Length: 209
Image (cartoon, rainbow, N blue to C red; front, top):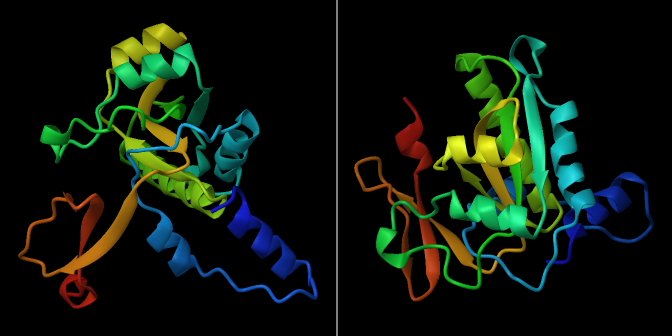
């Protein structure tokens, strides 16, 4: 999908364009918004793209309206290589050593907090990561949320004055990902078959109480 395709379609729709524009539902964005661990090297994510993704944080909910989250953009190059050396991906498939060589993510958003970490800050973090991922999906990009990383190394290397809580990798996905429905008593671990990455999701009937 070309960069910004969904976003441009929605802009045309809202501006009253005479062209027939297919409405992009939130459900569609949710389904396309999958954790992606492999990326295309021939697509360059620009700083402007990352800023557009981060900008959603000026509009989303924040507990007590603290707005304590801060964001460090990391572009392709030595800085991104350092981040890559200090993160872990695909923890449920350690035998695959993800990401595969030549498909590593090359741009990142380091999410920090300017206030002591609390339950509210953690909720804000989840809202932020999901919102940024949805924005990236709308732009035709893919993401993966990373919480397994060497915090001390990241702080020291980038001279961060705020505590990093998570890292969002951003790029053009090179993976085929599908959802599969399971019952509440089945395993939740994602898996791969014939190059397709399957993500189990508990059925609607089983999440209602």
